[in-house]
Length: 373
Figure 1: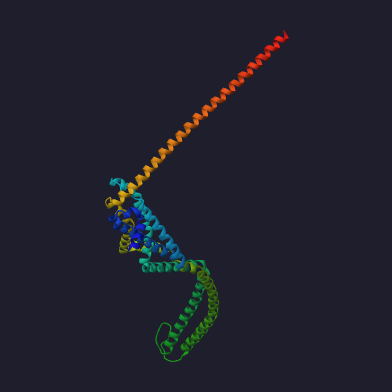
Figure 2: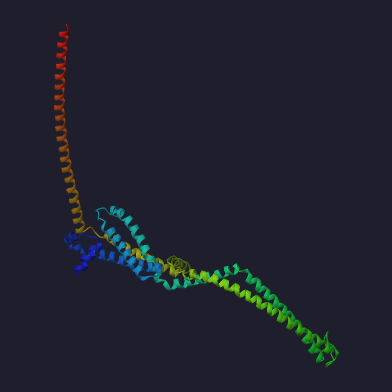
């Protein structure tokens, strides 16, 4: 338990030596540290899942997930440890507002990958629907890109229609021949039973229609086989183009695609939208919990010790600064005094030397002047 206590103290960013002197504050900072730690764990899991969706490999996902979790843990620890309890509540809230905004942003970032994992089945179904739509659109676009297939199919339909018309004519002649043989009275038959003259004419017409139909079938079937072979060639080309697009459609399973599917699901289902909102609120509550704990908790002995320690450091700094300033001023004054004194001596020596030279020059000039007289 001692190791767990020290570990959660470390997670909360508390000073061990000061916290040991205020044992009543221990549980509060254990709770803050545990919240910071588990927030980092959730961030690591969320990032690991999101990166696994991107890389489709477990080891990079584990590595970068741990790295992201450590970064979030360190940031949360800094946010909590940098907050100070003041005697004025409004001053605390002013300092806490930027930290709360940052905590909310972190909660939104952490919650999104976990939402994707929670609604994975629904998202997979939505992605399958999108893939089906893409396949349909791809086939329609490819069909538009190969108009020759429609033209050849239209020719085949025309040839089959010719055969169908010939079959209708043959059947009509067959009915008239049968009616003539059995003595049925119609507009085109005599109504006499038996194979009479009219029946033989109908039989000849039937034979001619059958021959024409057989010839037309054979001729058109050859043409249809040729056209179908051409259609199969174009279909093979179209299939190759579709297979080129197939990997892109099958690969429609990235992070952006899943987020888009989740957004579409929340728009379609109010239950999904409510669940999504509650999950985000849950993570916002978890992420901001350490900050609110520090805000709503009363000022305790640890805060007093911490302020006292910081005040001592400020006082020590002020003393050192005063001593350093005094020593510096003394050194500057001494330097100025000694420097000016040496300068005055040098000037006096120079003046005396110049005066002596001047007197010698005057005496020399007077002597030369007397000699010249």
